[in-house]
Image 1 (cartoon, rainbow, N blue to C red):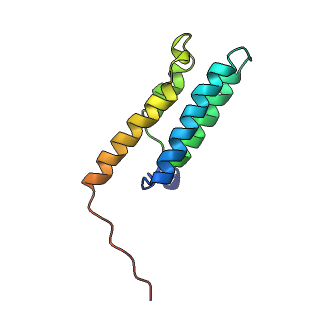
Image 2: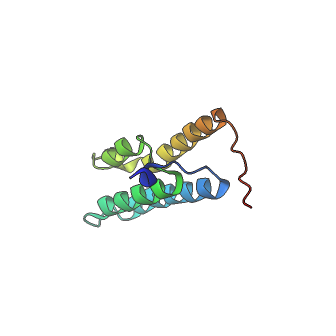
Length: 105
């Protein structure tokens, strides 16, 4: 369980991947609005992939729920949420002391 909730160190690659997932999810939801249950499927996949990329954050839950509210689901909520989580994680990681390199013998 600890492994699932562990927050990975933010790297450029993780940030780019998370933002790409969010933008693609928001774009697909606009394009596939006519397809039944497409929004919900995209939301579940986006939630899982974003959590994998930058770690789970409590802000992802309201975003996930907001996607089920008519009219609000048209907003780019995944993109906004991922940007907010990245900003919060960067602030948290700046406050942490730098990690010491491990030397194996």
